[in-house]
Length: 251
Image (cartoon, rainbow, N blue to C red):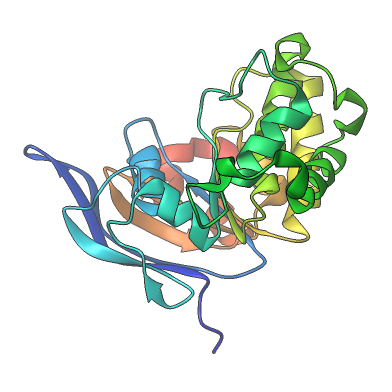
């Protein structure tokens, strides 16, 4: 049996007397899109925060490629090969698309003193930035300031910034939030392209999008895992229908 790329073991996070994440044990396979869904307050974003190092767990552990990363800071998690997006688009508005990606690529360098060397010597960073922009359909906007981009294009730029760090695993928190239909379809197609080369853990409320790109789905309710399975299994699950999705899950 192949070892999972990422694994959680009895992962929990308490806020006072509230269990935001409760005893979650999951395996995420390499090369798959694994969606995490559930009602508001189910603990989805908290789970992503625990995986990315934004929060320390109250109990349990996280393993990446078989090695513990529990409690590592976000920058150290990123250098291990895990990229993270947030619900709100996070780019440097006054910098160009290329500069945004170049800065992101630089974050993977092992030394914080790299700024003492001339930027021109970091040809690998420029190449990584351009590859990411190309994959995200923004190479033609390379020299444009991020402030000039539409909301959908800014989301694409944020994804390009993550890709510029050359991660093995990407954590996406509601990448379609606030988008119209056309922009959503463009980002969905981008996620499909990325999925051919990377592993993705996806939080998303758009069920049509989830069902169209996910290989496996985990349903969280009140911080705990209700069920994990393929799209077909989740769509047919009576427990999932009763707890969350209702009749529309099987349509």
